[in-house]
Image 1 (tube, rainbow, N blue to C red):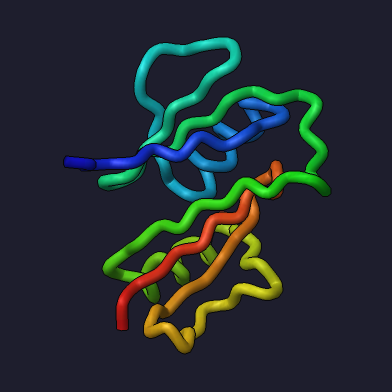
Image 2: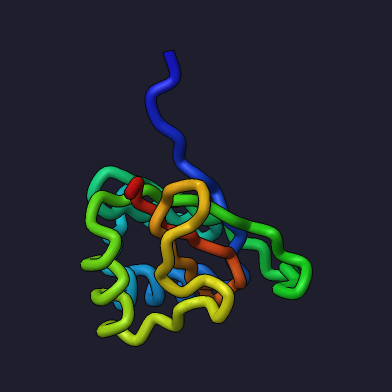
Length: 117
């Protein structure tokens, strides 16, 4: 019965978040403009953001796992766009059979991308 999930992550500044996801990760915005809420999508996924100006980035545990079917292509695209790859999350094959890499957004939300291998 469940069909999709749209994670909601905190953002200290929605403009900075929007610029990062649109310019660096090539997401697109949809929906109306709201002063404290942002909705973005790329391909078949949506990520929503709520404004939380008092967010402590050292205490932020926001994380999402995004599956892809072109992990190497996505990894190279992000690198070409100047997206910093998480130092503990370079592209690698994990023991659980997923090829993965991770990045941090400006609010230290962890995004891990993975493909079955």
